[in-house]
Image 1 (cartoon, rainbow, N blue to C red):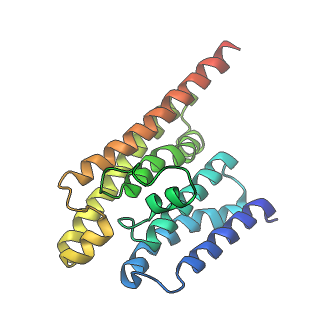
Image 2 (image 1 turned 180 degrees about the horizontal axis):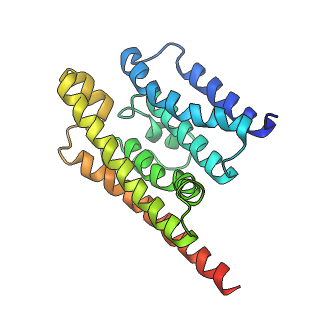
Length: 206
């Protein structure tokens, strides 16, 4: 039996992906970015039928997919979040002083936050770890995943042209981009680690 809520979420993600591919701004780079989208949609689609993931993990991956699809549309470096914030009246036009586009930093931070419930689930169900150990292992998995992705970006700079690799990686001329991206994932996952550990303490006291 299919889970109707999960199916609806997956269909919305697929629809969003298709819509953002209409009249692509950076067609070649967007195709490369959507390899990641497919990898994100596969476990979500499978779970529509298996219904094994906790809803927190399913929603977390889904929200991350939305952020990634938006980033793929503008290849991260050019997501016009500053213009959106001004047009919505959230901030005034002179609010953003840093010329750099920090959308990629947000996504790396979100990876640490939104994937944390999934990694906790993996450690509890597949590795059979206790709650406290599973939470700590999930924290380590975020750092490992973040490092592997940065290594993947480094490999792209070797096999692809410098312009294409720079557009995909979103370095924007920052030689410390990889370290800062990993730091953002570390900050996000550490916040989740503290929240989960606090919940474990509360549950034990009860």
